Image (cartoon, rainbow, N blue to C red; front, side, top):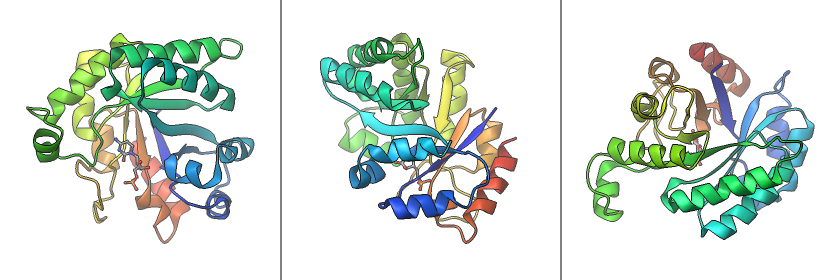
Length: 231
Ligand code: C5P
């Protein structure tokens, strides 16, 4: 089942509760650094207590031992998905999985996915600033293969890379794609953007949608419209 994960990129608890109060059923949300740094990790438990499913998007990237310890503690939050940057390397990703498995409660741990190249990164920025040669898709598929080797459950990528990742890593390897925009939306700071319909056609497992929903005049209806496009 394809899920639409709503990015709760708000800075206050009031905005979050107000936004979520418009939904009659639990939804899948993404809590990232903006909200966590504003409200602390307590916000995760509060949203969880409302019954919503949580992708905790803290994008860990540090030496293996530190990421292992961080992940071991994140398990206690009982979220559904956590993530890290694939750029940290295979040893870091393996350590993350060790931390998650050691921290698992009753054998249950969150899914762990790796951020490949941010959807705000263009080929030019990747080549000229990051000094990674070649096409974005080659870098992204390489990161995905590393993530799979390290035992991760999937990756974060753009819609344009999902098909190649499934070919390289199998259909069970999750692709979670931000950079989603409705046809008339501004792409804002994102680069590799695509519509929900195209995401479905390309076989993306779950999409992450922030501003196209949170800035809409009727966010709940826009969410339902996007959900319908993904089914
Ligand atoms: O508002 P918008 O739909 O662009 O929000 C996308 C969300 O997905 C943001 O919370 C951003 O941090 C996150 N994200 C992303 N690209 C990645 C990984 C995460 O845009 N590669």
